[in-house]
Picture 1: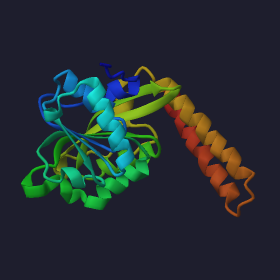
Picture 2 (picture 1 turned 180 degrees about the vertical axis):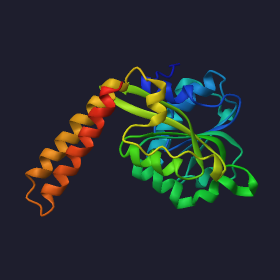
Picture 3 (picture 1 turned 90 degrees about the horizontal axis):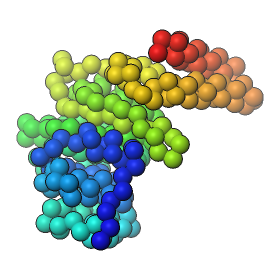
Length: 239
């Protein structure tokens, strides 16, 4: 019998889970995070979902090889939040996919999905986007969600953003739409300097590529991204 091995990214996600309540892992793929959570007794039940049958079969194989009690989980094929639309969850994890896709999942069911029968679908949503993290953060915090945790984690040399939001009333929402999360800056994350440096390099790289692209708006695009880089450098100087 093997044991789940969590990367720093996976462990960061697990650490944000609300203990003692059911969880759902949307787009679970390998199912390692919920398997580890169940084996440690952090949560009493898990729903593992994916839109494709292939990853779910691999997920089932992993759960069996880890020795997870079958009565503690349900593996369901489905799109987005559809398989867990009945709610009653402590935490919903949506990790390892593009930020645009995660936004689509929220949009697809509508924000009202968090208010079915007057109760939230889940008390907490943990998201870990591979791309478009800034847009996703802004989208969620401008909606009926408040940011309650935000951490950086390394995996295969890449810095990943992991953050948790919880449903709230419109008056409690606090938009976090900056180039770098205000929440993250306040926490002074150990990886924050390296993270901002990476964003600066990316901004200058995009500016350079735009300037030689030959597009009609090449000059404007390059200036825009140089301005972004300058703003990030100012943030960097205050760390």
